[in-house]
Length: 233
Image (cartoon, rainbow, N blue to C red; front, side, top):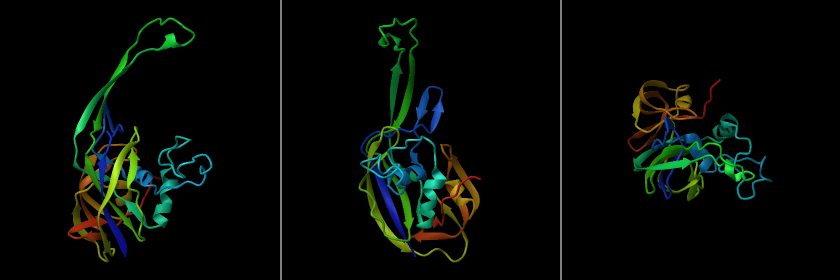
């Protein structure tokens, strides 16, 4: 038996992470990766840096090595039977911000600037009050944080549990459609993926509107694929 949490996020600040770069435009896709949610929700803990990170014992807001360790960090969630789906937008709007900077050599030992090379770009961000929805599946009850931070600017977001439901993993495989985004690495090992749309974003592009065959959990009329974290290799 698993507990399914239907959760919503409401942004309090503009959310930025470059899912796509088009020339000088850095665009934020209105979808939140499940890896990012695992860190933001505090599900990934690290005792290694507990002495150097005074406020949190996790990689949520601080990673001293800047080296992805998804397999190392997320495998314990498989052992705890915890899985978080990516979040899709319920309602959102975007803002477009222009940034510009120039060569600042004149700040170093009063050195004169030999040439002025301006640089500029635009960042498309998800605006405050935008809402997202995701699912969390766990064998045990969890205490989720009320407030989390996401993206490059550590944007504040409110977490609301809309409903909880207990469900057993289906005994038989069935064909069904899951309209929310999925991580293809997590689903393709255990399910037959028939059709999907791609959402290009790092570190692993997501798929959505997925027609799939396999085992699932049921939340009212919605079938959620029974998944765990998988990795390349």
